[in-house]
Length: 316
Image (cartoon, rainbow, N blue to C red; front, side, top):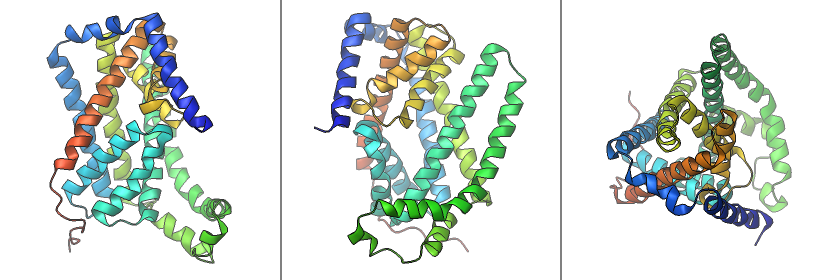
């Protein structure tokens, strides 16, 4: 067992022990019997709507793409990404795109990297706006939005200049026997990768719009679940949900995110003075809610029809 896998298992065990010591598993799960199914269904529908926006982002980015394979890619990538340790589930994205849509790995890996950049950008922006709302610092909100847009506009030219350097650095870790199969010159290769990011095009701004819309729906849905279980406001719940989502950038996670996801929720909820035991119990219940939807939709996507992996012809 590697050190990372040992830490992952240890985090999961630590979560199980902490819950039993601070709350008790029976007490933690008991509120589900009292929660209105209408409330839970409302949160589920919001999460499914956010999934639809992610499918739309994928279809727009790789246009033209058939909707059913796009749904299968998104849901199955979501399943593996939530279940496999150390974010290794991300590797399923290029594999699924090639299997269902014949999209080469170079395009899919660059798209995934950019999607993650936009996702992180959107989460941080929503966190700043939520904090400004909670503290009454309204002047921060327009400033944050302007800085958000300006930073994204500057990132395109910056990456264009840095891409040759980044490619050369990446090649240093590629085994020599594999390097021989790669192009001798990195200039053309770097430009090809840059072209797959569609900088300074309407597609890039639409991608930002899909990403922001996804998080503006997904975070309130998760925040609503935290609100129900922590008996707090929706705004505070959103802050806690952001804490859980931000843990995705950590290099080490518990099994299926257990331990690290809850720790992120507790950390941010403590910042708004929610009791540790209450925050932990709500965080675990949110994680169970998230994993339940992930399992049902991910497994269910395998039963969707497979119309073939050829993309539809481009419209004239």
